[in-house]
Length: 268
Length: 285
Ligand SMILES: Nc1ncnc2c1ncn2[C@@H]1O[C@H](COP(=O)(O)OP(=O)(O)OP(=O)(O)O)[C@@H](O)[C@H]1O
Ligand SMILES: [Mg+2]
Image 1 (cartoon, chains in turn purple, red):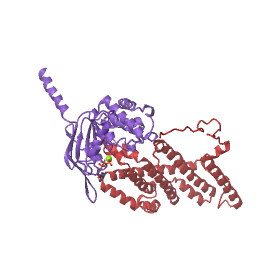
Image 2 (cartoon, each protein chain N blue to C red):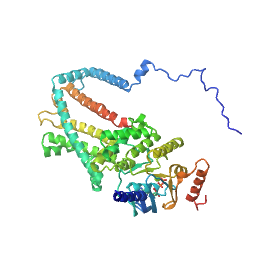
Image 3 (cartoon, rainbow over the protein chains, first blue to last red):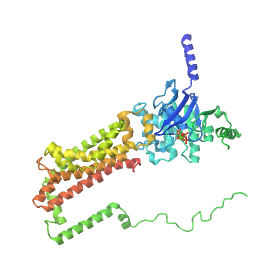
Image 4 (tube, rainbow over the protein chains, first blue to last red):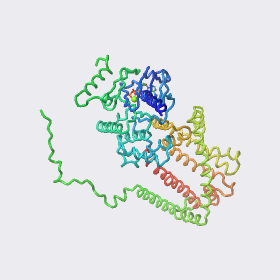
């Protein structure tokens, strides 16, 4: 018995140590007709299980590009991206995307249909099970009332919550979110952020979250990766962000520090 | 200085009554229906037709509406018009179905390969401007005086419009929706039918409607030119036949039938599809 439990526990230890997502010295380029644009250069970072990992940087520094590469929509020119030790070569349902755009929901499906769609087509669940699961997650984001409505009848915030429910219902290894709340008004954005955190408390899913708002990064994340302007390189990493105390002003201080770092040497 | 909030006295509205809702009178309500107004226009046109034809007094040139309706009714009763219409619709379905099928195949090839795209673009650019009816003489040589020739021109009339629209619909599908589809690991035909087709459906439906309109006009025209062959011609042949025996009210009855079928398919079938799909989804463009 001892002989079995020992290697097992060592294996567990290793699984805990090995990061879920490894981005290793990744350079990403776009080839257009006239030129080659380097979006990110030599970016390295690791995401552990249950991390709320934030990519933060100025507009155009390649955050979306990095996220798409982790999603498998783009291949790195240099370096390698692995998830669970497997190299990422194409998109897959183990990495569910939540986009900024409101049109990410399939307009020809109801809210329920949208959440069920990947469960049926990618996870290949039987329809009854898929429906149960979909309803469970729709309830979690508080949208049971509109489960049978079509997306065009929902507000922007509701659409984003459906997209989050759809991503979470798949219980992916990592949820990839590209500024999911950027197009929302300030009030709705705060509600959605709170809700995301509450959901995280429940299931502790892993999320890679892109934003260009420093305050959003501090609010959502436990680790923040700061990227330099075009082409994006890693400038710094902020750890244990969730240990911050919101009331005593340390959040504001961290925000100022990050701002300083991001825009250092630009004279403001 | 402190900001102050001044309550406005007019807010609790107890004195003056505001008309939030004003009831429309019965007649106004009735008139606000589009169908009612259009029916009215049709009735006026019918009256003008009747009056003009009576004043002209020459049934060979322009029969009265009543004569036309009587003739229509008689043809319906003795089954001739029904047979002719059925014959037309059968060929139409055959040609339309085949045209749509070929267009789908061509478009699927086109979205998957670059050469396919070039092929589709070249073919549609070449053949789309060519009126289908112009191919009829050639079709008659190739396929003889039979259904084959009619189906050939119908396929030609349907295929390019449908392929062109479907293809541009596919290309217009947003990058986000495409990425969503790929995120779900949909590939090949499953990707086409579960993501691209529904996402492009408004444009596809437009193509199907244009294709239908082309097909119906082409068929009637082709039948006017020939139709003798297969023993039982269609509606176009019915019109031609009756002109030859100078039964002008029957000619008008045939024309009326062509219009009615066109209206039924456009307003009943396509409108129903529209209501069940793009209107329900809120994606009408
Ligand atoms: N499809 C593309 N073709 C060519 N260049 C692109 C393409 N998409 C992005 N880029 C370039 O790559 C760089 C990074 O773009 P990216 O969209 O990743 O920025 P971002 O950090 O997400 O910015 P934002 O915060 O504004 O969304 C930019 O300089 C942009 O010009
Ligand atoms: Mg972006």
